[in-house]
Length: 252
Image 1 (cartoon, rainbow, N blue to C red):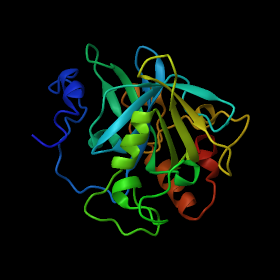
Image 2: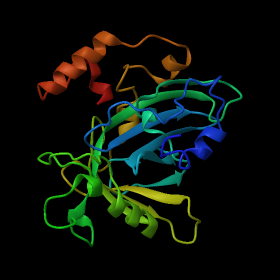
Image 3: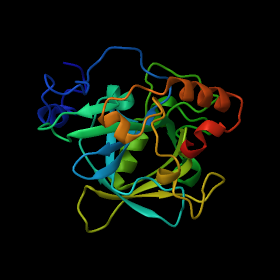
């Protein structure tokens, strides 16, 4: 079994992979140069948003009942859940009844992330250049053979606070995950820092409800409606041109 075996034990024990289309993990495909982040909108027993950050070869995961907010005044409860495999990063579909987390899942956002050393008490290891194994490749970094966040991030998680920068379709800028004191190990808060990407008074989960991979709503995924390929092509072209697509203005 791959080196992530112990980290994914709880994930695998909770699922019957003969019934669910969720990935088993342990794949040997090419790894991204920069550590992955994703957010999945999940209509299980109650609607929530699963925020996932690639750390040490797996996706560390937090369930956020109200979803992320670009308003720094919003402190969103984020409950740490079991580690997920990296292959889960692009999962979208329906988890069947009787399975753990049964319900429809939409890939709500995806991109890459890096520690926000400018807001951390420590500086990047060595010098101002941030090594890939410590924080993920910065735009000008040359990746080595150990992509993904590692020792520095692990120390911050153990200390109960992680400050990081997201580079996504809907979420960007600086954020923090901070463990709630006296509320157990699993209860954290997800908070947007004040920066050029913050939007006081906004509600991004309502403004941009659709999938970034298929253009579908959570209801459309539930009934198996095909992806809106033309809508997505227009949105991708508009983003590449640095413009906002009128046809998808409600979603990003």
